[in-house]
Image (cartoon, rainbow, N blue to C red; front, top):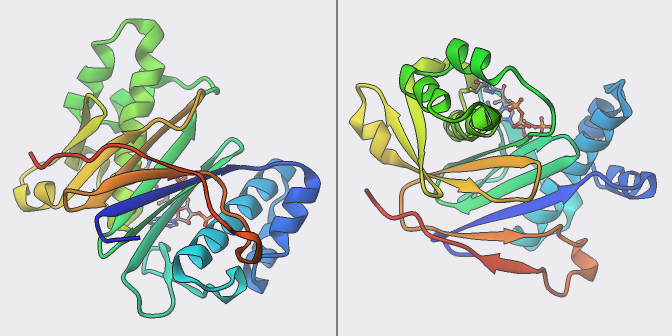
Length: 246
Ligand SMILES: CC(C)(COP(=O)(O)OP(=O)(O)OC[C@H]1O[C@@H](n2cnc3c(N)ncnc32)[C@H](O)[C@@H]1OP(=O)(O)O)[C@@H](O)C(=O)NCCC(=O)NCCS
C-alpha cells in the first residue's frame, strides 16, 4: 500500500472453532490477557480483534502473523515494535472488530455497536462540547441516538489517533459531520485542527464508525477479513472516497 491509502479491515467474532483458530495466532501476552476475560463474548471479540491485527499487519508487512511484534505507547496505544512507517489502530464493539492501517500518517478508528440503547441526550449534555450537544438536539428524538454515535465515534477516533485517550479533554474539541466527512475543530489550536482529516465509515447496519487520519489527500479502502498468509491469494476490497483539504 502507498502513503496515500488508508486500509480498513473488518471482521466479526464467529463460531467457537474460528475463535480457537484465532487464539492460536496470538502471542503469549495476548493469550494470557484473553484468558482473563470472564465474559465469553468479550474474550471472543478480543481474540478475534487481535488475530485481525496480526493477520492484516502480517499481510501488509509481508511476514507471518506470529512475526508481528508489538509495543505500546505511553498511554497504551499499540504500535509496531520494529522501526516502520506503518501505523494502525484497532477498535471493537458488539461482535465487530475493525482495524485502520496507514503509512507515514497517524491514524485512529472507532466503531460502536448501535443496537444497545443509550441515554444519548444525557451523555451528549455531559460529555460533548456545546456545539455537538446542540447538533444532537437539533434532530427529531428518534434520531438522537444515531446523531450521538456519529459524534461519539468521531471524538473517539480523534483521541485514538492522538494516542492520549481521555487525557485530552472531551470538551476541548468538536467533531461535526458534513456529508460523510467529519469536521474537527480543536478550540484555540488551528494548527492541530488542520493536522487531521476525518471521515464517517459505513460498515453495515447497527454500526457507527469513524476514522481520523493525519494529513489530507488519502484514499480509503475497505477490506474484509484477511486470510492467513500462506493461503492469501487476494483479498476483497473496494475503494471509497478521499476527504478534500478544507
Ligand atoms: C482505549 C481507548 C483509547 C479507547 O477505548 P474504547 O473506545 O473503549 O475501545 P476501542 O475498542 O475503540 O479501542 C480499544 C483498542 O484501542 C487500542 N488502544 C489502546 N490504548 C489506546 C490509546 N491510548 N490510543 C489509541 N488506541 C489505543 C487497543 O488496540 C485497544 O484494543 P485492544 O487492547 O483489545 O487491542 C480509551 O482508553 C479511551 O481513552 N477512549 C476515549 C474515551 C472517550 O473519551 N470516550 C468518549 C467519547 S465522547
